[in-house]
Amino acid sequence: MPNPSPSISNFTCARSNIHCIGERAIALRQWRTTILSDAFPKTEFFMRSDPEGILEAAFQAYAMGDLPTAAAYFAEDAVYAIYIDKDILPFAGEVIGRSAILKVWQDLILPFELAHYAPRIISFDDDIVRCQVEFAFRHRASGEVIDGVLRIVAQVANGQIVRYREYHDQERLRAFMRLVAADVAQMPDF
Image (cartoon, helix red, strand yellow):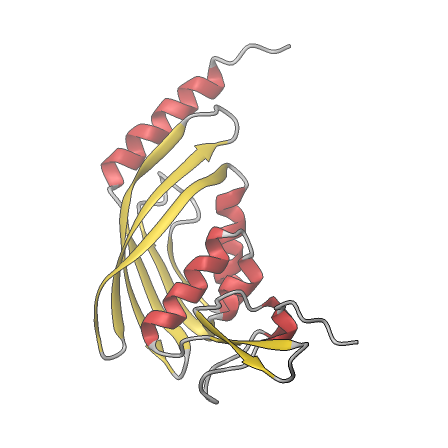
């Protein structure tokens, strides 16, 4: 007997040029139910394939901690940049390629836990999307939290993110890293 509940396995693409992630796809923007018979409705999911939809899908996967799915929205040779000095965050700077992007994210989640991530698309022009993200990261060793707003300028081509630039308040991050370094240095041993 078919399962009448919606599931990821019922995922279909709104357009044929979208890169489906299959069972791992979580960017379910819109859905509709079609009655196949009186007893068993089938739910079909549609994912937006426009640049804003691609960004929103990647953001949603990232916010849920599904880094491989988030990375799948980036082109194999995507350019990813976090504009912060490396003396503040060693994994900052520019990297090229999906595996390098995953490495940056993995290096980020070692010292930090994502507590809040709320992206908002500010504007878009053809393939360029500008976003603002409210964030909060908890420093694992000290328990201190840094929150704020960062800016993102991304370029999407052929259904994938090809260039991603992230802008932070560098001096605020520098002060926070000094704070947590002092906290960790003063923590008593138990």
